[in-house]
Each structure stands twice: as structure tokens, then as C-alpha cells.
Image (cartoon, rainbow, N blue to C red; front, side, top):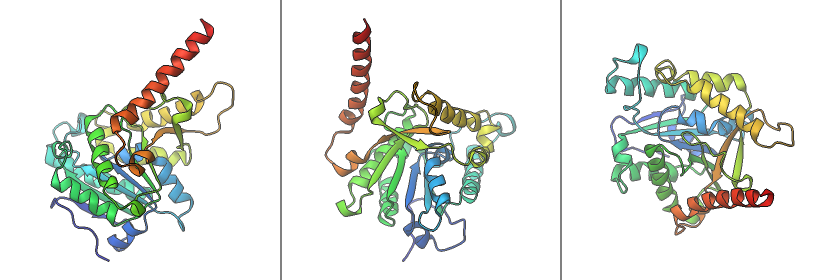
Amino acid sequence: MAAPTFSRAEADVYVPSGGDAAEALARVTHLCVAAHQDDIEILAYDGICDCLDEPARRAFGGVVVTDGAGSPRTGAYSDFSDERMRALRREEQRAAARLGGYAIQIQLAHPSADVKRSGHPGVAADLAAIFGACSPELVYLHQPADKHDTHVAVFLRCLEALRALPAEKRPRRVLGAEVWRDLDWLVDADKVALDSGRRPELAGELLKVFDSQVAGGKRYDLAALGRRLAHATFHTSHATDRLRGITWAMDLTPLVAEPTRDVEDFVLGHIERLRADVAARLARFR
């Protein structure tokens, strides 16, 4: 079995255990495809923990689609060129893969502008190669109501690739989790609670690995963990906290199982259900 080859010379395939890349990818059960370095550790921490909890049955794989060149930078990193930042972020993502026990970490190194172009041949071919070389039971993506343009573009490119798979090859479940726009606005029936309160020490260490971001002016280590705790506490007013941390997700499986389903209608349906919920509650007590 040969490992996939990718369209960009800068693409990086890393197997922390040192084994064969094709074999590592083939055994992945939980796959996260995200836009930037550190997005995986924010949106798919639940999957990382699942695989660490049952290493004999589960394996986590991470894919970063873009090169990370456009990240903000201050302090010790303020003078870093885009090229130097790309190299640093690549190594930070490798370090996170080692710390999180990932089976494989792939970094495709596409410029964001290419990902935002529907039909870009390199992006499409790379994602098709990845999804074709593994059969994950669960795929984590960015959620389609995210407010970061690149996150939404990566979601759409992944959806295109998943829909192009034969029906029997598509994953059983696909979830879109929050990064740049929280999903606590979803009505409770639409929420998928990802258990992100496990292994709290690891959760913090995984995000601190990305020092170019944390020390460079973005305290993702504090913000992501605080959000998870806030979601767990404010999830329900009449019960004690069931989980120590929650990342909210949207179930995207219907969009993959029904390839002709309109994405905008699907997402706007969630917003309409929120509107109806707010209107009904106001009407009850007016």
C-alpha cells in the first residue's frame, strides 16, 4: 500500500511513531480536516481523547489544509517572514501530533487563496487522496456557520470530496465543530456535545505547543478551555454539570449522505429553528 502523494512540494506527512504512512492513514478511525495549525486541537479535542482512551481500537489522524503563512504575529515573532512562520507552524503541528498520540499528521501547505477557489485541482486532488486512503468512522470538520472565510472554504472543499466518494466509502458520521463562531446558539435538539473536559492537563499543553500564536498575541490556550467550561456550565439551568468541558458541534452527516442537499438551506434551517424557539418563548410569557 503506497502513501498518497500530494500536489505541493511543501506538503508534510508525519507519522509520530515512525511507521509507514500508508498503514497509519489506513487505520485512522477519527479524522479531523482543518484549515490551520492549532484548529485541530481546538475543534477535535474530543476525538483526540477518544483515541487516547482506546488506543487498541481507535487512531486519530489530523490534516491541515493551508500553510499558516497569514497568521498574526507580535512580540518575539513580530519580525518573522511568511516563509519562516510557515516552517515554525509546521513544526508546532508536528509537536502537537506527538503530544496527542496521533497516528498521522498531514499538512497540505495550500495558500488560503487556493482553498477559497472552488474547483482548485490541487486542493481537490489532495483531499480525494486522503479520503480515499482511509475509512474513518468519524470525521471532524469546521462548522459551516463559522465566521472565518478560510474555515468555511475548507469545510466546502471537504464536503465536495466526501460527496464524491462511493456511498459505501463515506464516513458514518461527520461533525462540524466550533472555532471562530460558537455553536451555543443552536437549539438544544440540534446540538452535538463533544466531551472536551477530559485530560485537562493535556488540553492546555496541546494548545501551548503553538507558541507562535499564544506568545504571538492570541491566547487560544486560555480561550478554548474557558469556552469549553462555559458551555458545560451554561448548557442547562436545572441540572448539575454532566461534563467538565463541551465543544459544540453540528451534525453534518445528512449533507454527506444526501449529496444533492443544499448546504445553505441546511445551515439556514438551524437559524430558523433558533428564531422559532426565541419567538415561541417570548410569546408564552408575553
